[in-house]
Length: 101
Image 1: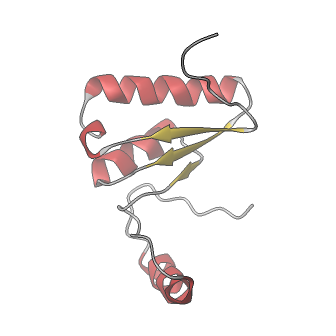
Image 2: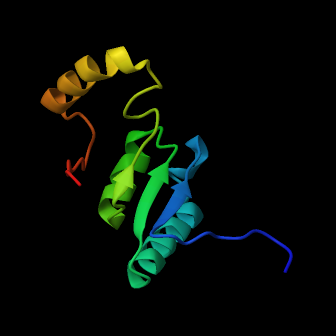
């Protein structure tokens, strides 16, 4: 079998780029992937969130987890505790839902 392989081992990763937030075609694909993951009993993780529009769309569609520059840039571990405390108090991301696993 040639072509890309989609590994399904309990989670499905959706990678977004800066251009994907306002494109209706991208939104339909993301919605479909999230629906497919739900039907398969998989958790979705959206990567590459860079804009408020992307964050809002993923919140509306019900992505289980999100990450990207919209939330934070990569940082050394020693800065993470301070960042997390500040971020949780501000909760600036639209549609942000904090969960503990």
